[in-house]
Image (cartoon, rainbow, N blue to C red; front, side, top):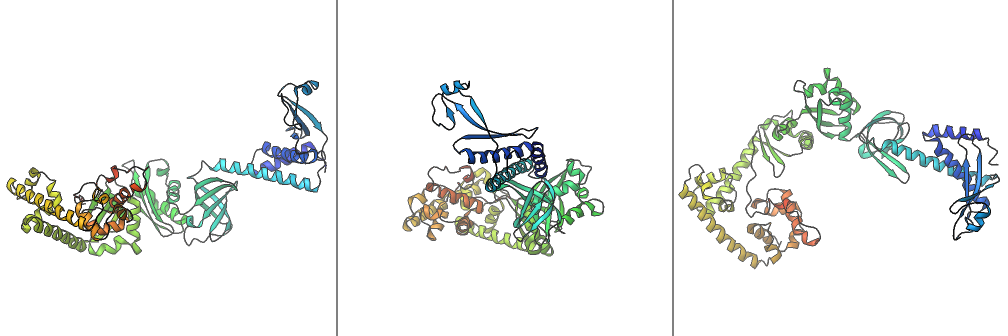
Length: 523
């Protein structure tokens, strides 16, 4: 086949047709054709030459030329010429001599190679177009047709591109087949070697939020805001909403007349049960709302541990927890708080045990009666060390105390702590606790002794524990939670990474040798 055998206008028409079919620029198709002809030309006239092909964008006329550059010092005879040689052709330094070459005839192999070059360039242009079109659409909902459904993924035809829904982003037990039209959330767009990958999701929390945005005009207009979404796809979900207009009920607006709006979303999500929760700036109120339909009797909030202890009537326990813990799990995800559910009977028993344990500790250490011990516990004192660091004036303000009682109790506490510390120091020496652990500022002496009794006698031993193990060993000695335990362990590991500084702020609460009980807020 001769390069001149295809009429110019027909060549342009072919380029136009390919450009329309692939939704890419016509010039990119013509450029691909030029590269294919150029490659064939170099195969015929020599790869060492600078052979260039040009196609006129209007007429489709093909021209094939050999370009030779005029340079001061010739390093490549095939692509360069000297200044003197250039003068013969009236070519200046830095310019090119362009020698027309006769049209080439494509053999079978050359034609196949040209076809491959054009196809590859067109695919590259198509991929670039797809990436450019979708990279800024992450977070949108798209509609497509299922092109291929497999157990591990679904390929969705989006018209001008293809998207992929991986197994973990599918709704469990959803029966989708080839040819079904679906909506999906654009989760991510990545530019990879084999082309842009458009990852879709039907299980993402954001997908539900976007569906409500489409179904509820007040959300689309910004009057109602979706604050949080928690889902177990295909089963149950909770969504919290807040109205910026006090005259509009956010829950009612999302439900719609006779449930029409929420049912539209439920239908898209294969019957997923959706609870719409009113958002509250008050964390306790928000948690109470999120646990609906269960009734809540009392809430104790521990801000340091980001935990709420929720007390419910005995007959509400199963409702609050939900089937297989689903209700409390979704409420925790929605609010961002760890939620522990107790019945009123369990809470009462737990409090009585805590009070007795702390009271007995004070009675034994300070040689006081149970009335004074209960008063100290009621004021939030947990350890004897708490009394040592409290001013006498503050102790004297406790109901039933005066300055003399406060002074005596504090003196006894100081004496007890001094004696106890000496005893512990002696025990630490006997147990051969290393200096690096004894000088570790984030543990109290009682904590060190407890660790040593469990064969944790060096900083490396401590560093090898996990937060759950540490809580199990010294949690009763004033360690608040696993988060604080984790901070202590990371500080113990700091010497393993000399270039990484310790986060002192994160350890501020654990640097005190006396830990106080988390403050409680009731609702």
